Length: 384
Image (cartoon, helix red, strand yellow):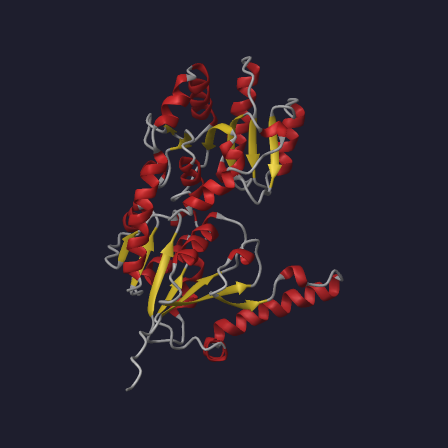
């Protein structure tokens, strides 16, 4: 008797820049760890084969990089420059002649190609695989993409030409449709999934003694849009008012020197800590009283989901998709961006310690587990 035919795997290419540490990369990893690889064949096609998260990609996923990891470059200035130019030329060649690359890596027969950020829209649209369904995945407020208005308009025009697309928050979808006067009928809203069991495991790891009883913790890159300077100034005002508090920042970035100068100027080194990068920021959230997100722009921030998994009260700016996550005066407080509003909310919770207990008693973890199941069901439907 002939052998029964095995069902053919669904073949997906996820297109992204690199796997540097960040919220988008965390979402991508959560998706990759969700797939049943008896049913799916997945390729991760990167501009550059670098990033802290590369080692966390499931072994079943094939990683294909157009350019090399910069950490392998020579320390010799001339050779280093030559390697950078060569890497850039490789990417330019890929953009000009993608078919050759697709043929070399056997990518022409895949069912889906996913532009996992707006940066990848043009590359996926230009794919030489004309049979694949093209999908975009938009994570933030496109108005803050870092591109010009003309370039953003081009992104939106490209979205309308894709087969389908995903926005991680209703706010993100609404912004594009309202700002550019379009109706993206091909788009759906799928919130970011969380690796809940992994989060709870990381939360159980010990922290250094000096960081065991932190009042306010924030996690994010140090640049102006994240509002860390507002948090530092609010902290300073509270110290001046006589409050005994400690604030911890996990993350690094271009604003570090400015923040350190402020800390030195006002003698805050014993109460306001810039930890820098950490492989496990979650354990520091677990050992704090409140999680703070003072950003001026967000979409559906993973770090708030991680804090809520720990039933930590959240103080956050009322931006982007945050109100889709935090219930005001139930498991946290929302406020408009700015140092004065943040100071007001920090002072309010310090003056009324019962709020911490009340916010923590709301079972955000149970809510997120139920929501996670719905999200993964949506994702499975997306690729079927």
